[in-house]
Length: 106
Image (cartoon, rainbow, N blue to C red):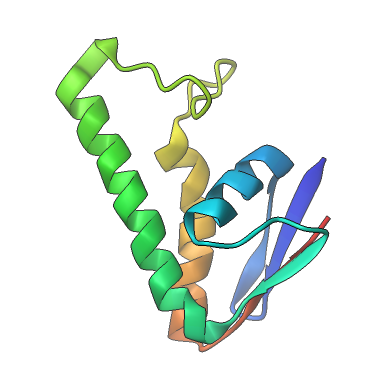
């Protein structure tokens, strides 16, 4: 199932429900059938998400080829969390710049 994030600041971002749920969990939200990240919550959301992405990158660098994040890497494409979260992080950053909310629905 797909989740679509909407904001007046950016084009829509569409992702699989599992990834959306994971990313929303990082920033303290639940997926539900609908939801919102208020513009007043965007700064904290960016900080939380960036912290997790930085930690993931640090661990991957530290362990090199031995690092295999089980549920965060898509085995078909080889894309890790950093690559898969980037469109959402970009949306958050643009929403911050334009004082916009982000809403989602299934």
